[in-house]
Image (cartoon, rainbow, N blue to C red; front, side):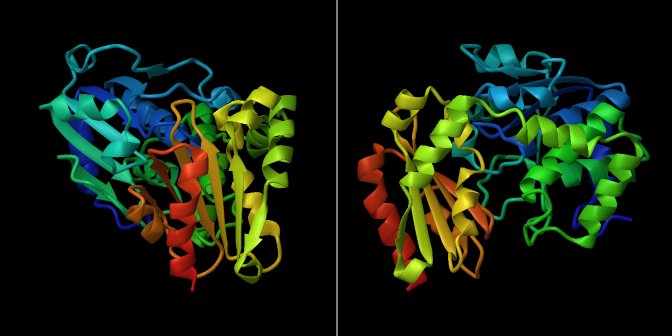
Length: 330
């Protein structure tokens, strides 16, 4: 039996009640979001359900391998009414926040059908949904995998690898403190049904573009240290993206390099977005609660990893964010 704090019987009941499902997740989808969506789609399809996955933003090119059949759609300019036509159940995965849904938030606001949330973030808004959440779960991919096992569903090798990818990336390839014995038991089950860790690792970390390599170099060169080395912050500016030809998604995981520096307790990455706002990523390897700071900035997440978006260009966004972080660290 799973040790996670989820009412599996109720989740199974909700899934069995619906027939036509719409799945979505947070904007700028990562591997946990995508792997969870695809894994849940596979679970539902095995139950004879009809499923669509629609996100606000496209799947990053470097993560396209996770969706070999292009099942994940982009909202684009479709109206909420068009998207919701025929849908009786919406499942939101890997977020509980309106602002993280991007344009899909409007779809959810217009929906009158059954809505459920499957998430592991501590912070949350009222999305008008029935919530299945365990903040102690290391990844939503773990929740979806356990749901399948609890319902007696054997994931296909493809789905097993998608769920493995979700869990592996959200645990920093099992090096974060969120990794437990339960994590490894779940991973063992996924490998038994066909997950291929070596292939996932190759796709994630051994097929980088030259543009990403150059961007990472520029971001790391921007690193500045404060508070006797306990705080490191870095930037990915508009000039960096123009000079390297890299994508915004190429900043994924770069922040974790700052935590490799001895004595670092908190790391911040400021990323200039195409719309002129600034994406903030926070990471901690101490008792510092990133989610607490992120919530003050209008975002959310976990104690060790959180994020927010600031409606200011990068140079203007840095000072107020650093002020909040310094206040929490001193």
